[in-house]
Amino acid sequence: MSLPSSDLPPGSPQCSVEGGPGDRSLRFRCSWPGGVPAASLQFQGLPEGVGAGPVPSTLLASVPAHPRLSGVTVTCVARHLVATRACTITPEAPREVLLHPKVEETRSGEAEVVLEASGCHPPSRASWAREGRPLALGGGGRLRLSQNGRRLLIGNFSLDWDLGNYSVLCSGALGAGGDQITLIGGPSISSWRLQKAQDGAVLTWDVERGALISGFEVQARPQGSDLGRATTYKDWVSLLILGPQERSAVMPLPPRSPGTWALRILPTLGGRPGTPSQSRVYKTGSTLSPGAIAGIVLGSLLGLGLLAALLVLCICCLCRFRGKTPKKKKLPTLTPVVILPEKTMQNVTPVQTPQPVALKVPLEDPSPARTHQASGPSTVISPRGYARTVRAATQV
Image (cartoon, rainbow, N blue to C red; front, top):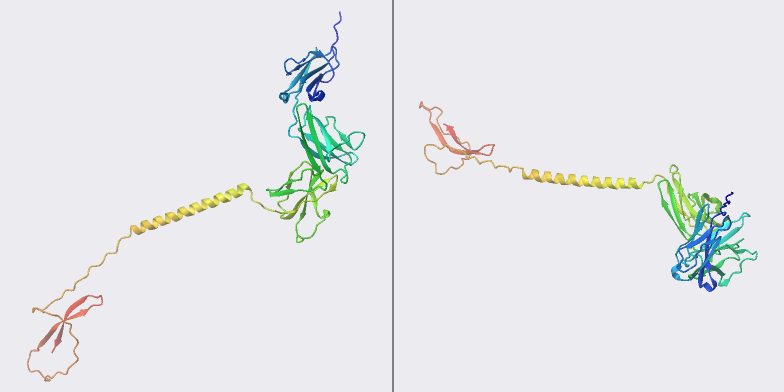
C-alpha cells in the first residue's frame, strides 16, 4: 500500500482588492495555485452573508461598496496538508494624496524624473494629467506608469520640454482625492541656516516644492580680504556630497586651524550645478561648550553672592563697633586754693609790676634792724592753665 504524495504550493498566497463595475462593489481575490493536493482558501473578516469559501487554489468574493469597509483588514487563510499560510489586504479610501518628485539616474547617465502619489491606496486607481490634459501613457514613449499606477516615470527628462504642472486623481469605490505639483528647473535653495557646534558646523536648508534636485554639495573656501570679489565654481571645495532627500548636514572643521571660512550649499541636477545658496561666514577656533558657559554663569553668580555677603558682614561689624564705643568723660575743673593773710581780703586784684623808683634812703641805716614790707597777694597763671595766688615780698 503506497501513501499519496504531498507537495506544497510554491511561494505564498497572494491577496488583492479592486473595484467592481461602476465602483459599486469591492472584489477580494486570494490565490495560491499548485500543490498536491490543492490548498483550501477561506476569507476571514468579510461582512456576514458574503461567500468566503473554502475553495481550492483561487478564491473570489464580491462585497457591496460602503465607506465602513475603509480600514477593515481581510485575511485569507490557506491550508495545506504540509503547512498553513495566510495573507491580508486592507482597502482604504484616498487620504492626504501628495505628489513627491524624485530624480534618478539611469545606467546610461540620463536623468529620470519620478512622480509618486502617496495616500492613493487600493482599490483606488490613479489618473494622470499635465496642464489639465490626460497623459498618453505607454506605447514605448518617455512616459511610463508603474504596475500599481501610482508612479509616473518621465525618462530622459528635458528642462526645455518636461517642466510644468502635473496632477493626479485617485478615485475608487471608497472615495476620491488628488494633488498637483509644478516642476521647476534650475535647482536652488530657498533658505538655509548655519549653527556653530563644538567641532564643526550644522547646516539645515529647504527647497521649493517641485524643484528637481538630484543631490547637494556642501562647499567651503577660506575667507580672506577678497570678501566682495565674485567667485567661480573652481574657487570652492566640496566637503560633503548628499542625496536629494537630505535637508541637514554636520560638517566637521579642524579646531586646531583657526580661521574664517565661507560656506554655501550647491544643488545639482543630473551632475549639472544649479543656483548656489548665499554664502555665510563661519569662524573656526576654540568655542565654549554649553557646559563651560553654564560653569561661567554659575561661577559669576556665586562670586557676586559671596561679595554681597562680605559687604553685609562688614556693615554689621561697623555698626556694632560704633554702638560699643564709650563716651569721653570730661575732666573736673580744679579750683585753685588761695592762701589769704590773716586779714580778710574783700577783693583781690592782680598787682601790676611797678616801675623802678629811686629810693630816698640814707646810705647808712643806723638802726640795727631791717624793716621788711610785705605786699599784697597777686594772681599768676601757671603754664598748665590753673590760676594760682602768690604773695610778692619786697625787701627794703
